[in-house]
Image 1 (cartoon, each protein chain N blue to C red):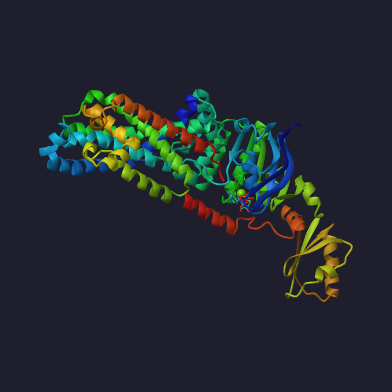
Image 2 (cartoon, each protein chain N blue to C red; image 1 turned 180 degrees about the vertical axis):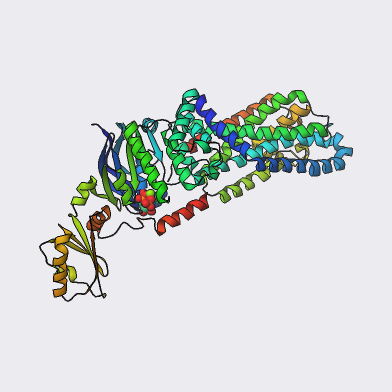
Length: 331
Length: 261
Ligand SMILES: Nc1ncnc2c1ncn2[C@@H]1O[C@H](COP(=O)(O)OP(=O)(O)OP(=O)(O)O)[C@@H](O)[C@H]1O
Ligand SMILES: [Mg+2]
């Protein structure tokens, strides 16, 4: 298989802020590649550089073999992009938005009309096509943006946080579209997200990005295997639990991290065997345990393992909310 | 190439047609001006207008100029849509498209020129009712002149809007430019009676030529030529075309450099 995107040492600086600090990775043709990272990690910056609307400060990247700096027009022809923030013409209807897009990409006549109908049916917006976008809901807008990006049948599709701020049902729906697109049209997909479930549901390969650097790269299973098989969370009584991780010397426990003041995250081979051991040991240390639970590792555990922090607001927290307000205002 | 100009024109015209309330607003504004200012001034000046307006009555003097001024203000203000597009995000869709930015800007300016000329023609239609001194046969010239100046001033508006980020800032600058240009253009009083320094400044503004040209086409009277015999309609048209072309080039240059930063 060929490489669809090749990125070497890409860096971007906004004045004194270094948003992207020399990242390298490749995306294979037909793959769904995900950039997973917290707010401000540099995801949007990377996607905008690859889509040629932002110039890199240094480094090199090719998209479908075309250099993004020297041949931007060629890149633009074969990619589609769905921006993080809205980019529709609100005064025009859904149909007109798609029509303008098609004409901008050199399509026209009967074939464009057919493409538009097909795309609208794909995202199930056909019956709303003559309503102005102003009257669409958030999820409908997102679907229309997906339809629009498909009009010119891009070989590579960029999606910047495709389901941000949407309700769970709509999110699952959009995942279905993305998967279908990848399956039916063999579209290579590059998406960014800070939802772990999204990365797991869609991506065949994931790069975890934090503060402008890629800190891990691989398939979901690759990444999880770095954490071990299971993660045990132990909630303790009291606040003075500083040295416990150091004191906890057990063969079964691979690593121990304080993720909150009184919560420990322990990596173990097999939770069912390790938990009794851990409890016995803690009892010996005279530490009172409030609650214990364990789960198969998630990508969040991988992130915690690598950075000691959680990917915040991953389940639609305050930041999403603040953003939605911002969107509503700028609307 | 035509394709890319066309699609942005299509978009601007569609948006214009959607904004019914705005069209009606502009229209009412124009009528109010005509009726209150035009008829008021006309009744005050008509006894002497024959002498100071080269035989025209005041309404016939004012109407062609109002046509040009209306196009000027509407197109100039139209540049603000670039700022709205940035805020509402549609600009990204244009920037990412595999088309020449110069052509999208040209299409956009043409679309706006078309709509502001259309507006002005509607206003002029009312003028034809108010006075019988206007020459209907000159309509094609008037439309072409309107499109040329509309194209130029929309481009100027787009250029300014591309450099300025906030709608408030844009409005401030546009206000500071349109007001003096409108007054100096000789739309409301005959420039040949104005002080010399004013006449000289007026000659720098392309709007002055547009106003005089429209007046010439519709009434046969050119006030500018009275002061400067060399300013024939052909020369005036040439000046206007050159100015508009320059504005289009500047707008295209500035927009070409636009990024999302
Ligand atoms: N136009 C800009 N000017 C200055 N700094 C910027 C600009 N755009 C982004 N940044 C900064 O660059 C960093 C990376 O931003 P970026 O938008 O790429 O992050 P992100 O991973 O997309 O985050 P989010 O999840 O919030 O969308 C942030 O620190 C941000 O403040
Ligand atoms: Mg982002």
